[in-house]
Image (tube, rainbow over all chains, first blue to last red; front, side, top):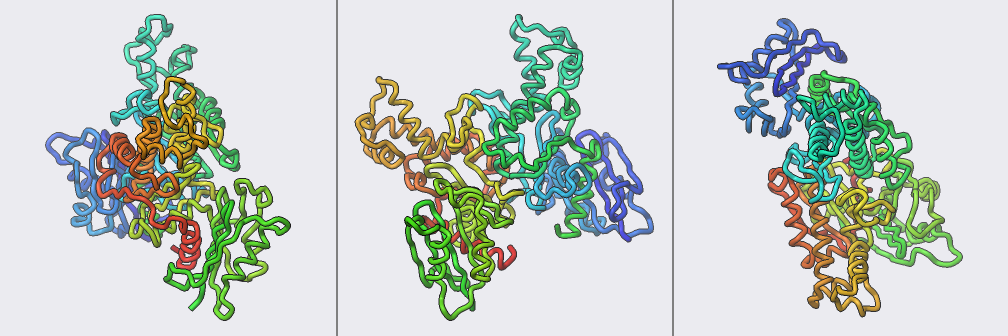
Amino acid sequence: MSIRIAVDLGGTHLRAAAFRTNKTEPLIHKKIKTRSEGEPIFERILGLIREVMPADEPISGIGVAVPGPVDPEEGIIIQMPNIPEMRHYPLVAELQAILNVPVYLGNDANLAALGEWRYGAGQGHDHLLYFTISTGVGGGVISDGHLLEGSAGLGAEVGHVVVKADDEGPVCGCGLHGHLEALASGTGIANYVEWRLNDPETESNLRSSATRNAVTIAEAARAGDPLALEAYRRAGYYLGIGVASFLHIFNPSIVILGGGVSQSRELFWQPYEESLRANVFNPAYLENLVLTTAALGDDAGLLGALALVETKELSL
Amino acid sequence: MSIRIAVDLGGTHLRAAAFRTNKTEPLIHKKIKTRSEGEPIFERILGLIREVMPADEPISGIGVAVPGPVDPEEGIIIQMPNIPEMRHYPLVAELQAILNVPVYLGNDANLAALGEWRYGAGQGHDHLLYFTISTGVGGGVISDGHLLEGSAGLGAEVGHVVVKADDEGPVCGCGLHGHLEALASGTGIANYVEWRLNDPETESNLRSSATRNAVTIAEAARAGDPLALEAYRRAGYYLGIGVASFLHIFNPSIVILGGGVSQSRELFWQPYEESLRANVFNPAYLENLVLTTAALGDDAGLLGALALVETKELSL
């Protein structure tokens, strides 16, 4: 019996856990801050892996989930938001040189899709779309049982597709216009509220709110604030348009929504589903289609990294 | 040595050819009209296959390319444009029952992608996008060496993604608004010209033209007609926006344009490439990316059907 190690390298927290084959409950699980003054992040990753490694059992592989683009084939982190020291960092080679076990690397949203497929809401669905809706919109795609990565690992950037007129849509975090992320992310929701509040006629309790973000706007919506309700409805509407295009491309049997915003399901689900249905060009795409929310929650990255090791070992 | 048979079942013409292993020059090739009064289309397909079957050599498999949606797993033609008798037609079962060899079925645009990958402009590119731009916009995707089909064979409908504002974009052949097909197809080009000619101020020699379609508009553009030139430029511009979104999704190493409109390359290539570059959110998607036109021409469907048999036999 051997052990698999999963690492979730987040911008704020670094988590690692050890798993026995066919178990998704970790033997041991540790979480620390990603940064600590004076200690390189690589040393912190290595140290945490060693803390969760059992002393007396062999390790078969280590999976690492990273936010931002990676080159999975070369094992290189291309970029991590807000962590310049990890730019073009050959994490796989560095870890393998020291630990002498296979190490696999993946983008955290892609791996969350893999995790949901192997252990979560998407079990049994070999054609699966996963969207994580939080500050941005990311995601992952399983097509015919394969994780979509693209020629250089940059595929499945599902937030960066046009859903509103090219040059009329709002600006996306990437600088372009009208992307799904600009319309359906938490940031998109907050930007819409700010834009509407520029009009002094707009009535909303959010006007006097000290912080306006997806969480406070959801609270206001639950309290009946019309602008907050409209902001979530609008996000759901555009999400449905975007997902409809993805149905035409991938013809999945399940679409899973994860991330913080998806926890306010009641605020956007109806317009999401309505616009999705209205924007599918053939009802065949809706036959046997499951629309649901993610099952793995905060463990998505960690279990995704575990799923990566598993699929590599099983050559799925 | 065994023989593979490829069939291209078009709306107008029906073609069949026999190929030796590792050859793309047919031993024998026949072409007839798809319809003939009094004879069911199935009988015509069967007859043509028998005509190209060598008498003294074993057949290993038959591939059939069909316009419109198919269920490749079940071997059923779901629908063929303008040919109602082939609706929900179990072509694979019918042919196998009589000929007793494996038969494989695929959508012609998907198979053209497979053909370009195995024998055409995309050789060596395991991450490939193919668009066929003619009356509509279709296409196919090779992702990590796998043909993208989707859970029910309805994937890779690459013409039916939004590239212009949801409810402001022009109407697509499918009835929805703002799809790539509505903006970049031959029909989209012709519709734009009609729309502009509604304005009596619009100056164009096309006003007095008896037939206005993608071909006559291309001729006018080559003669310097400003409206015709603008119509092609606009199609190229929106094609670039659409393809940019597909780069974010699939991160391919090559994008191949086929179909009749792509033969007017000089009329839309520059705006296509410019808007593609301008709408990619990270220059990494453009590194080592090949932008080119299809190599197989009218043989795309037939060689795609051959590639289908080959990939099935090699379990690629």
